[in-house]
Image 1: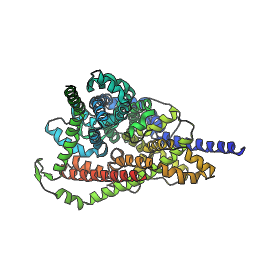
Image 2: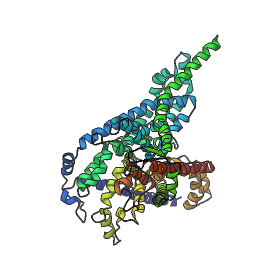
Image 3: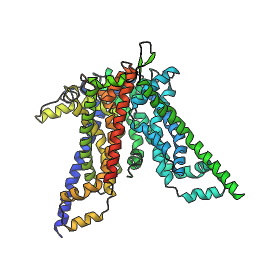
Image 4: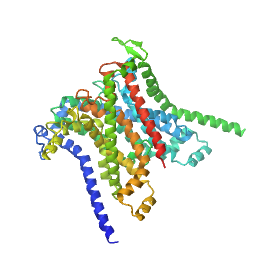
Length: 275
Length: 295
């Protein structure tokens, strides 16, 4: 019996060591990105690379002066909030109806968008939006990004609605409550946390989405992610500003994801895994 | 009379339920179902320089079969897919085992692990572009400090696919690990007690007990990653746009460029429908496998 604890301590140490190695590999490039964004311009491309330097915000200043970064951010916010809102508006009642009726084809239909390559939709959208003069409009961007947010909302809320005991609804029905009233008055308050997770993940994935804005936006409606493509082209020698842009673009999804980290994996796998 | 009243409320209920799902269904039909059907129609068309479509039958598909760039794109897609998937599963299962021994995951450790796959893939690409720069990047500095040969990474036609696979593995291994961890935590502890009594070694326990029981979870993770990996776009488009030359020209990148750089919408439609068929085929195949390994 005296051997086991020593063995345990050794295993625990090996485990901590492996965890530390994984943590370093995961964080090192992110730390490097943030460090580079605060380096003076002559030091960011120094070789050998420097770890100790006097930090400056000149890269951020340069980014704001040489690019319309702020208006790109506003565009991103409009498209992201718009598409997440549209996803919630359509997705909440749909998830409730699917949970109630057990007729799942509407939910499965939205999954097609999760599986098919985005270019498959982008080709006909481009032709269609061009015909009605919507290329470059917020409308086209919000509608296309809602294709991303809708399945996220539906598949995160489905298990939440499923978890409400049926007797709660039956009692309301006896009192003469219609299905729509049951949704708004009874079910919705019970799935508050599910809606928060759905809203945040819809926001994150809409914010991060690259392909649609690349084609459907124009100079006035360009989102940050689509603009990042231009930053890379122009920034080949301006690493400091490039890394400042990368840091700022990554910040909103990272902050939001931290808020819902506990429910993240179950939400991301669209119900395939409970974790 | 009560029967009639019941039917009335039932009709009303059905009507309300239809109304609740109608916006989502109409949106999906308008934005997904109809456009896909339209794409099928587009794939049978050829567009003149003035943008006038003319029916060309299966010509776009015939072109695809004889297009070297298509077969090259298919090869790049499959190579990137297999390499990334294997790396992410191996490292993901390892990381899940390590995490499962930690007594509990503090929220700081958890935040750290989710940050790679919660940041935009485009940002991951920008970040690695700087780290992996052939002449000034930190990665080559570390390699030469360790007396290892430096690499051209994304700028090398030979190494671009493994490099992109490494970037994606960096980004998505923690995700695979968290899925597998969920599977590990749902395994019945009783099977381990039995193995412990029999004096099985940790490796034997893993090989004979953990791995087979974990298989359904691993297949689930495989399906979720397959969907993303087969239509790989963001990281490649931000770093190489399919280059150097055409070394990282996946089918999705190739289709996008045919459609929106050369404006050959008809042929791009045929390419994208083919890629979609491949994705759905792989997902269906793994879905069957999941049924076969379930316990």
